[in-house]
Length: 505
Image 1 (cartoon, rainbow, N blue to C red):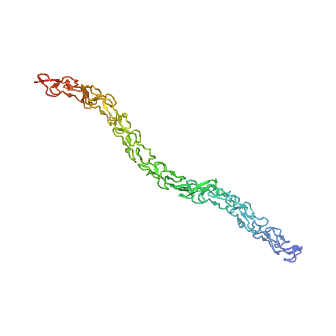
Image 2: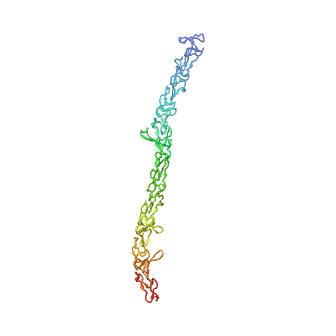
Image 3: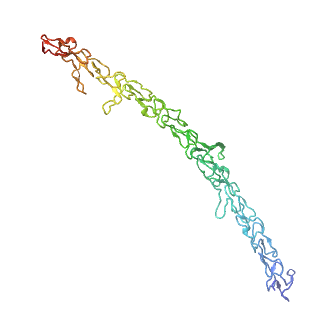
C-alpha cells in the first residue's frame, strides 16, 4: 500500500517493519517516501523532506528554508543574504545586487532589503550594505555601486547646486548667497559666493537667480536684488577676505541692472538721490564735475556761458570779440559783442579789452585793437579794419571817418597828415594838400579843388572864401583876402565873389 514497502515474502499490504533495523518489509521511514508498489523506501530528493513515517511522497521544502537531500527529514533555515522560495534545495538564490538580506529565512527576492540610502550593494548575497556612497555622488535606495548606479544608469553624480559628502543619499543644498555650477562636488567649498552683479536668493542654486536691480550694487554673495548691507568674510574657495552683500547706489552715482559697482555721475550731470538708475542733466547756467550730487553751488561765472550739461567751469568761454559780465549766462547769445570803438581780445572776456587803435576802426564784435578787414558780401569789413588814405581814425573809432575838411590824410595811418595848402580847399576826404577837381563818387559833388576866381583860400580852407563887395579877382589859387583887387574905376562890384567887374558906375 502507499506509505509502505514490500521487499519479499510480504503477507500484508501495510507491513510495519523498520527500515532502520534492516526489515525488508515495513512502513516508510522519515526522510523517505514510498509510493504504492514500493519494494523499498526512496530517499527524499534535495528541495524536499519528510518528517514522519508512512509517506507516499515527500513534502516540498517550505518557503524560508532549504532541504539539502542528505538530512531529508529536516529543513534548514535559509541563510542570511539569501532567500528560499518553496522547494529550495542546495542551489540557494542570493539577494541580488542592490539589495541585502537583513535576516535569515527570507522567502523571496522581494524580501531582500533595498540597499540603504547613502550606501551601496555591489555584489549578491550581502547581509549588510557594502559601504558608504563615494563623496560627490548620491546613492539612493538599491544603489549598485559606490557611484550610485541603479539599473542602466552608470552613476548618480551629485547635481549642480548641491554638494555630497561620503554616504549621501540626497546631497546638501548650497545655501542662499551661493551657487554651484558643477556636478560631483564633495564639500561646501564648491558653493561659490554669488557672482558680482547678480543675486542668489534661495538654496540649491546651479546659477544665480538674476541680475541686481537698477539703483543697487551687488557684490559677490548677495541674496537679494535690492541689497543694503555689506560685510567682509573669508572666501572658503581662496581663504582670502571677500566683500559680500551690496548697497544702494549713493548720491552722485547711478547703477543699471546687473551692476557690481555704482557708476559715478559723469561731468555735466548730477544725482541728489540714492538708488537711482540714471543721473540728471545739469541745467542751464550751471556746471557739475564728476560725481556731483548737486549743482546749486556751481553757478556759471562771467566770461563764460553754460548750456545744459556743462561739464566744467571753463568749458564754454565767450568767443573772441565778445564778453559777458553776468553769472549764470546760459547761451552764447548772452556773450555781448564788443561795442563799436572797442575790441575784446581772446576768449572768456568779462568786459571789452580796450579802445580800437588809432588808424583802425572797430565795429561791433572786434577782437583786435588793429583788426584786419574781413570782407562782407555788402563790401564792408566784418568787425572793422584799417583806415585807408583819405580816412581819419582816431583812438576808439567805430567807423572810418572822412578826413576832416581843411585837412588831408595822405596815407593809411588814420591820422591827419596836415592842412590843405593856401590857394586850395577841401571839404572832406582829401588825399593831397593841393587837391584838384576832387569829386565825391557817391553824389558827384566837387569837394576839393584849386581856389576858384572870386574867392581866396587860406591854409586849411574847407570851402573858398568869397571876395567881399567892392573887390574882385579873376584868377584861381588866391591865398588871402589881399588877393582880391579893388573894383576897377568906372565900375561897381556890389556883391561877394565878383570875378570881374561888369556893371558900370
